[in-house]
Image (cartoon, rainbow, N blue to C red; front, side, top):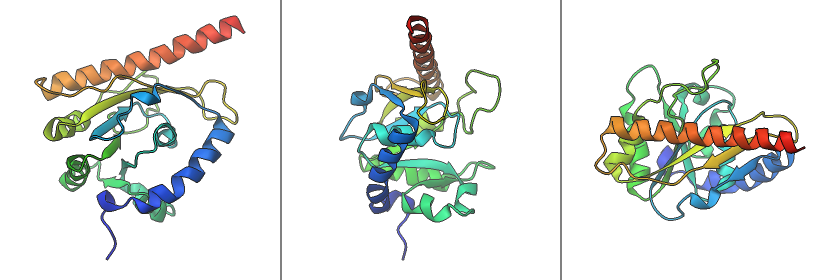
Length: 207
């Protein structure tokens, strides 16, 4: 009997070292604040979503096993075995998917790590940041997990000169409402993205 997504770690530990090396060589991303990612407690890593490879930046930033929540369509295509092998959790975006939420919270209750993009989809619009869904903060509140915000900017090009991910300070929902915590997460991700762009602008100015 195959393991459930939240129980699968072998594939992740087997493949991610190779992926980290290849990704670093090809894209040369800048990772800032990786030391802020807690090493031994339940965490929800959440940030903006612009490219199918976004999760790779967080996989590079920490050696923890991260169970990423991914749209169920990924599990129907040619790459389905890969997504299952590395412990991704399928999400049906057409409805409220209680099964995926329960799988994710099981990971968190066992002091694991969940990766999620609160925008719910890749941002293909002209908006700087899409409105956040509340799933990330809701799960964190129910499991007393830390939320680790990140903001990523730049281009996925060979030896990219501006691909950057920046991690912020972890925080707990605590006494905040889900809406208040979601606003805080949104503002933090937005701030981290703006810091990336500001630093990039300064580097171009001094080049």
